[in-house]
Image 1 (tube, helix red, strand yellow):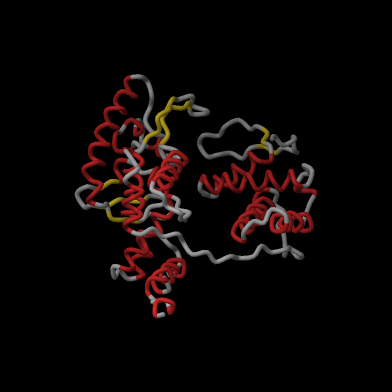
Image 2: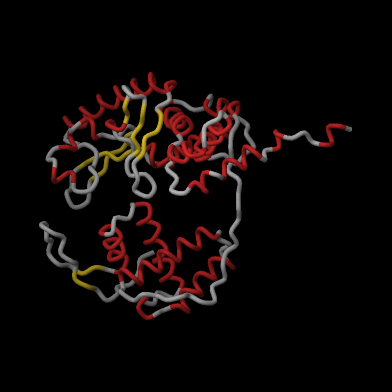
Length: 340
């Protein structure tokens, strides 16, 4: 659903490559401002979508013509009619505040009268070792490799699928996670069980990469301005995706044909199918493997600070959630009914 034309502004100059000024629509301006401020692509997609919903909710009025009252009405609608959680409502508010502060230049004060969504404390879904083995028995190929890394290294789905060849350190048995959540790098263990299969996989990927080059397909897109500072770096094997997608695409602007990394929905579908095939009744997702990684480490005696670093949590209170899974699990206590 497209938005109507809004008052347009000239495109700001971008350093050396000063492209000709052109007029931008509202969502394009939001995207440009998010990128210049270093937000991740996932945050960009979420914020742009919330701005679009906000405008459509108010009959496509321009946000410059609205204020705190309209913001409160939209947030209340999300809580009362859409029944969203508190984190979803907070994300929508952050996106709208970003729009007013950094795009429109109209800072918004305290938004009064907002119906707040209830914060629900949900325990993470943790799989037992037996359940993980049962699920893995129904995974094959790349899906099994990825699932093993999620459980064995505590990676997020996006972190796993965006790994580049140089991020795998077989000599030190480590994985370097670059630009994780919060734009932070960290090191996590490389599970020994995955090494033989991962080496064979990389051999096949390298052969496919060389076939791509001969067919005129360039390598993986490089982060930031690296492609300009290091010419032909995209043809270097070390910069290629560990888990490339099956299809190629044409890069907008340059018209260069490249190959993205595997999309997260492909792994999520494969994992959901394996969970059903294993007969599990838990609402397990790929992220449950990361929860299981943290919980099983804690049960084996790892300290909470170490787990915090491995998971890449900014606040130890986030990691402390797993102590409730371990300390208050039903398996730690005997039911009084069993004494009858």
